[in-house]
Image (cartoon, rainbow, N blue to C red):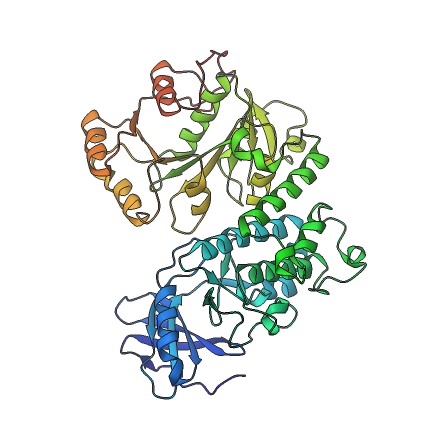
Length: 498
């Protein structure tokens, strides 16, 4: 039920936010693009809603709670304005440039392929797990395509917290029944209080909607025949379980759902590529993920990732080096040099996977492919994440077994590392390792003091990252000491990229 809006183009809200244009309207709100008059050039999304003045205290309390959320797949909520006698409230949040999943599905149906669906499912499980683990738990309650934004980097943002609520265990059912028909769990229509399992039903409805070409969001007998053929067969029982009418019969957590989806992807991947099957529950026991991210540009992130990968391969480890990028970059150049002189070079370059000195390189990889690799036979997966950009590939860095920050060894640039650490101070940093190519010893010691960690290393001169260099190898052995046996030497690389 759309209420009359009070905002208009050119208006200044709360003496700070200049309203530029309407972005859209939903059943309970209008959303506008606004410019921040205190921070020139900064854009925000302003969501206007209306509620009974008697509910102000509850609405304000839950809005304050939402401002505490911090997750790569959620927009930040930075301000809440609720001083209005008629019940109008305004929530100011990150403006996400992109399109909703609903828009993408309609405008680019071919882009919503299996890899994309798996990627969305994994990221939605991740953010739902974060919300459900919050204290108190947050139930989103409106999982639908128009509430999922797709960024230019093909990552999701869960938007529109208009009906999100904290779970209250003392209540037997919700006071107000809210949700979108076709995606809402049965208990949202009055059979009980919504909890985290209601969101899992919504996730299942969303996946079924995508998997059936937008035709179905509720499970019915014979539904299997409407699911597109390229969806992994093992995903079908996962969707079916998510869509069970009884909450007790669904998955009981987003983490369990994510594990089941990962196992389904694993089985599909190994069937397609002939790799060995490893149960998803043993991922972390069999595969270690090293995520390499530069504190800023020009620090040698790819150079360091390549050096780590070949160091591990010389230690007789099975290694994958993954380029987390959607466009051709350094790995394409490495591949061109690696196949130089071969008659079928142009054909080989069509393949995004190539092997070099015992390291499997994966060019221009999406996150869904990494999920598949986790279930394979690799002992180490090294992710080349490029330079640090908040909310862009950040999750892969934060969840890695060994997050590696590459900073400049230049005296005047070590502040970049401190800034990255400060930006991400809300996340645990005890596992982080810091590599500073060519840094002097006093710069290393200064960073160790300021970061309160001994895990800061100077990487000596190492112009060929594919080759064994004793001084650099000694540093890498120390950095990876908890994960590596004694190194075994391999022959010199047969070509030089310089």
